[in-house]
Length: 144
Image (cartoon, rainbow, N blue to C red; front, side, top):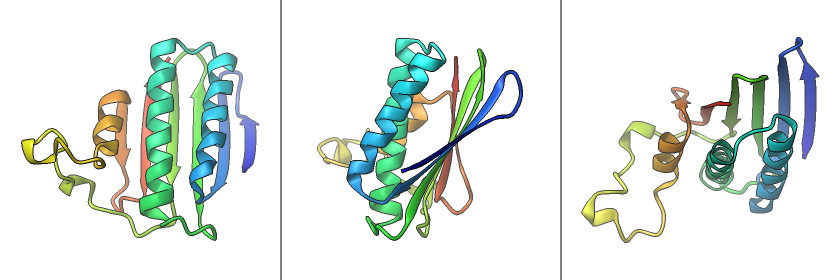
């Protein structure tokens, strides 16, 4: 994992993470979110939502976007405005997907499926969730 921090101003900090497309890279994301919780005094509910969303987005990028091709990377950028918001961007090097055409995981025919809930969960837990047009990058906003 490659991590970088840049202090832009008194209240804005930028972080970048570069992860290999391995499922165990999720541990680095969990550790990063734990560090953020302590550093920015993030409440338990926001912390839980951030951890869940970033874990889901990162796993999706690794498994579905990059197809676990270890030559491809997952990029996580974070802009922190102290006392206001955290804005994450999770991007992969895959072909993307049509996020508007995902099956509804709450539909009766999908309730017993073991997968297919990640984007649904992310959209409900983040304060804002924006996909790029290609579908290989998601922006997640959290108020603190």
